[in-house]
Length: 333
Image 1 (cartoon, helix red, strand yellow):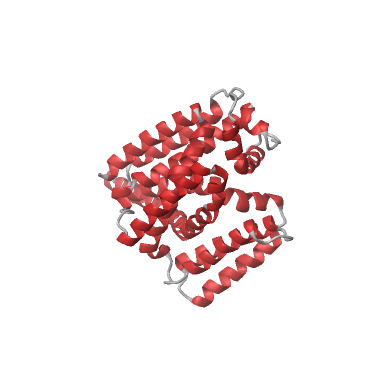
Image 2 (cartoon, one colour):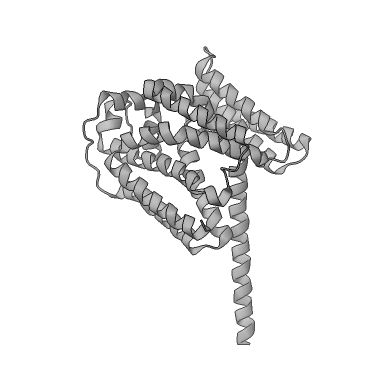
């Protein structure tokens, strides 16, 4: 499939995801997170491994793995500590490490950047806004929405593709629609849906506060209020399209071309995850928590490279336009 065709396919996937999110936001999220999510984590980690995790050192990724293990320990093992504060520190260090690993080649420079990130984190990890940004939003909304938008923009700029820019416009329009279309109070939801989503309620509460919709309490308000339904539609869209976007790019980034043992292991682990979610959704979510965080951390060097690439492409685009303008003025003379 040609890149232009992939862009048009993604436009269709965006519209379909948005339509489904309007109708069944909570059910769509739960389906996407349980069925599409684990397959995305597994295949992306396999693909990143074959690409050297987009780091300059062969074993740089091991620190990101270790940091992910720390998150798992904070979640399930360690008690009696400020878990949210240390989670904030861990994510900030992961960002610093990702930036270092993506570009620096000197071990000393990498070490200095990691230590610097840790020191900075110690100063801000007690700040509530920093905790929400790094501990709550980075592994959720920022990963599935902001980074996805960045990948779309980078691809469109690098290929100078009109259809790529159109897909970014549709992505923005779909996102805006959830906040522009009048939202009414939600319909009654079953106990299974609310119980399954309960561990994710904190994201909705934090997002409501950050977007200026006022305080929202965990519990029924998340599921039945107009604001709760509006935010859930956005979250369901962001997650569903994030996963579908990955699977739509098979012909572009060739993520399916991995060693056969990886592919077999991925299928077996994915089927196991489906059984876990079917047996008990919350147990499935908790069991795959570390895997979910792992794919977020291992992708960070690529995310950093993407944002730097966007800046470089915008600079080139500015130079190209300046050159065209200069040529036009020269012609007129």
